[in-house]
Length: 81
Image (tube, rainbow, N blue to C red; front, top):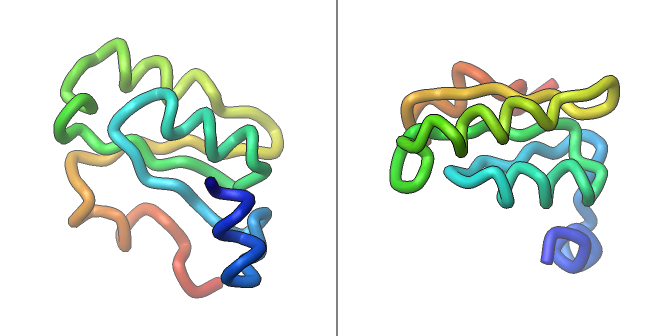
């Protein structure tokens, strides 16, 4: 889905981030070549195993962060750089 959206919208995946409440959301971003993933602690994100799993996906080419909610996205993701 991410690859199709990138194609349809001419997105630069290497400069894009995903926001999600499950480790699978963040893993999808990493697998698609995104710059990073932000795990939010809402919904399934309240589960500490989901948070830990999401944060464990960090690597040299993929950043992972955590935030309390989607409202915190602008403070964590470099939107206009």
